[in-house]
Image (cartoon, rainbow, N blue to C red; front, side, top):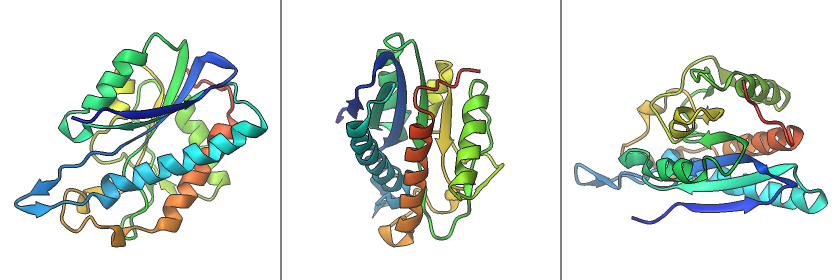
Length: 209
């Protein structure tokens, strides 16, 4: 299996970190048909790349107070294997950190972002994200996102985490119809920009409950 792919923008204080993540693997074939995984999760990976580019340019103007880590996880579809390995390795290196995990955004047919907080350690992070999304005109609902994703491994380690996913994704994922034409690229770009703005505006903040 291919390893995770990670990069970091070093901050002033490398005891703190923001981890932005998305998984790049998919199930491949189902019932003899190829499942391309445009929504799940090329959409999240594209947002991850956009955020990394934006924040790298921002860091040239002024260093961030904490490290910004970008991680494309492998093995999400086979039991969160990539994020499990990552959290196991990184936990203890940083005094404090939080995770923003992007998985299934930008579908034309599905609804708003599903931002109901079901985490036991992320109240402050969700409250701040919702305030930032309102400022950036990102629609969201108080509905729990479908399924589990790599943020779960951070939750188990009691690291504040947010799951950025759309409503009703169960209608589209793991199907042969999960192809690039179902995506609204402007919507993905808007969410990526809003998340970049959130990280910039909350520079150095660690959202411990």
